Image (cartoon, rainbow, N blue to C red; front, side, top):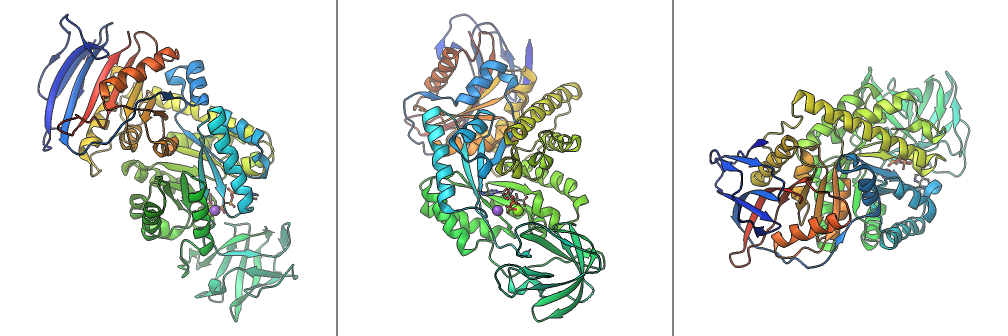
Length: 575
Ligand SMILES: Nc1ncnc2c1ncn2[C@@H]1O[C@H](COP(=O)(O)OP(=O)(O)OP(=O)(O)O)[C@@H](O)[C@H]1O
Ligand SMILES: CC(=O)C(=O)O
Ligand SMILES: [K+]
Ligand SMILES: [Mg+2]
């Protein structure tokens, strides 16, 4: 079988070396290999039963770093999944669970880890510092003592305008009833009075404007302004929940409101300092309005944290949609926070906005989480609605990197079942997408050249095209900061990506990337040796079999004397 891999690297100022070898794990074989170069740009690879590697390398001069000798770290869940289901059976879509009172015991956390939780989210809006610390310690304990690989995310409270009637349960607003929205502070509740948490909440609001609560739970018309407060009439009766969110409308159009509040409050900064001290992996920033807050936080983290904590921007207000591209570029990833987004924009716009955001993230190579109400009915019931399963499937079909549970896992009694619905639904849809890709040969990945590092981008685009065309069983990538792994993931290949890194924070960050199984390995200076060692370790664990083919992409291969960086694609068949 001869297959073409077209490496469209011409035109870059890079020296391209075509180097063909036939070796068994680094040892040259004497017999003549069955492959040939057809042109400078094309590499023809023949697979044989011996380990044959066709190597195409791009050479560039740069500083090289130190790599250490050691062993290979597989987390227990991926190892089990791989043994049970084989390479193609590995789930690609990552799963995030919000941790709340329903799942904060060591036992419940372990059950979620076993069921496939990749990232645990702690919402700093709720509960105490001690409570969050206790959960983080339990997750670290499970990782260290039982071999799980669960990353930790904190989600900031942010400066959010909320209204509250002061009662712990919901209150009904009847048609034509008159209510007073006030900024006055008082304890408990007063009849027909709703407290707003921000003095300036009514600025620019006129008589006749509408107030929509929680995206449509109830609607009020503003009768008059009284100081900072608003006297209103209920025009669409409904329920007022504690800590409700509100939007203002005029003549049927949403009033975009830019409150003069910083994205990160004093409490958020203290939560961030806490997060750094607890060695967390991700900070999700709520109500991001522009790129500035993200850049500021990233600069802060660079100077204060020894570890590369990733900053995710939550898209949940109108301003963030207006500045989407700059926010995506500035951040390490995005969360589509559909809960608050549905309060800020008309609900019917959410599906198309979700599609647009996932598209932009893919182009700019940033992981994206689809969050909120994926399986909302499961907060109360043990099975999802058909519509919820369809919503989950659509997010998977859009190739979102991750799906998130909120109340389903935090407060609901069926968190485990909800996680299992996410797992089975995503596995099924991933399989269907693979079949569809194969039939149509229409590559979803017409990504073009959109990133600054064109060499890495092109190598990964070509590598994935080769991997799919050759039908290899797995892709191995050796990466320090995870860039090559994410660029491969961006192409959404059919085979799974095993990313070997010697950096723990890279491993934990890659937990959010579609199709990537991050593995901590003590890599040495010698890339040939690394490949040989990792393949043999995986072979010894019974995870690769004879005749299975692996495509290997390596990012940093220091050539000791000249300090040269090689970026290469190799195809090897296991003997
Ligand atoms: N740590 C916690 N302690 C207690 N309850 C929690 C905790 N985390 C979440 N919850 C509960 O689970 C529900 C859903 O959680 P989640 O944090 O996803 O929703 P949210 O408050 O709407 O998010 P956000 O405020 O970021 O928009 C919350 O309304 C809250 O009642
Ligand atoms: C997750 C979140 O913050 C939201 O959906 O609003
Ligand atoms: K939050
Ligand atoms: Mg929110």
